[in-house]
Length: 165
Figure 1 (cartoon, one colour):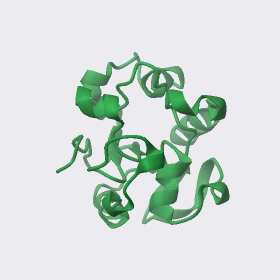
Figure 2 (cartoon, helix red, strand yellow):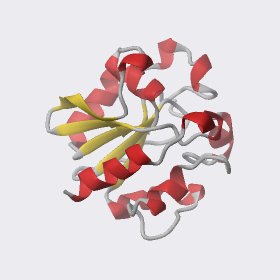
Figure 3 (cartoon, one colour):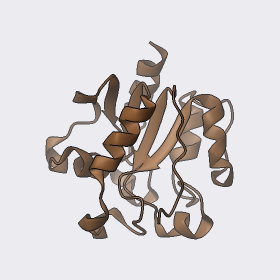
Figure 4 (tube, helix red, strand yellow):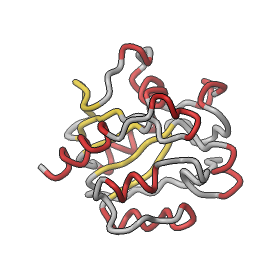
């Protein structure tokens, strides 16, 4: 059973895809709920939302053409300890093919690597050379507080520019 529900509908501008729910998010029942996570402030800072959305109000992203999902819907915990049996790249691809957002944006190289089946070191930040039908794929720096030294808002700004162009 999924830890967090998909927030998807046809016609979205972007769907953000994480690896799976972190422990804090699973307890809170909300995406990117840990206070140290930069996801919600970054969406506002790059202009994808007119105000900062509270994690508990995550379903409001639909009002802004944004969706949310994970590549391992039943995973709880850190990306580094993910049970690969919980990864369902096929289901993610099917959801994206069905809903056809303009962009699928992975919120970490780890999430992208689980879908693309490439090592994280071989995946650059930004737009990728593969797509799912008309849906382009982007890879972003992880907004997790634990990814601190690797954080950069630049790939997120690049995504916002791609969505506005």
